[in-house]
Image (cartoon, rainbow, N blue to C red):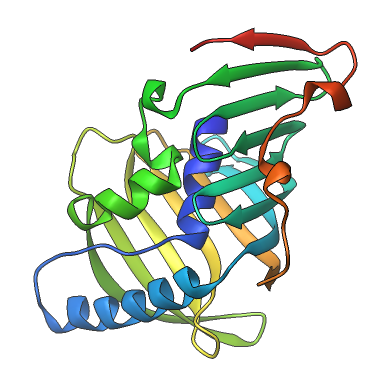
Length: 217
């Protein structure tokens, strides 16, 4: 589950893809280009969100609060009692209650989109997209764009992105799973361009006495 969470979170902040040039695709491309350009111009992003696991067939809805900090190719995510750190080279997954941290190399991860650097370098060949209309969330007009993975072996069929038409910021992401599990992220607040020290993205065992460190590299 944590893999799906982090993947969706990175899509919240870093989004751009490619496809054929129908009117719906051209409109989607125009929106995505503006969002991507604006997002890349931020020196940092801090966001609070709600993460929901939804399975309508099983009548399951499970919601958790979370937060994310992004700065260049670095990030820190807090969700479901776990802190995930990435300082541009090394990943730490800290299970807070268990006081255990796993250290990995991004190249070891099966899903390269967990690394924002890979997402930036590979997004053009990773998805097709299309404009899917508009809706209203909390009284604000949202443009909806559907992303379809080029590789059919993904665990999801599409990702629905909801952009605030006024400020071109992401508001909601819905990953539609082939197994009936949908992962939804609703951004509740976002602050950009605030100073963030690089140490935020590095796990420091000194600050966690007794932590068990498991190096999987």
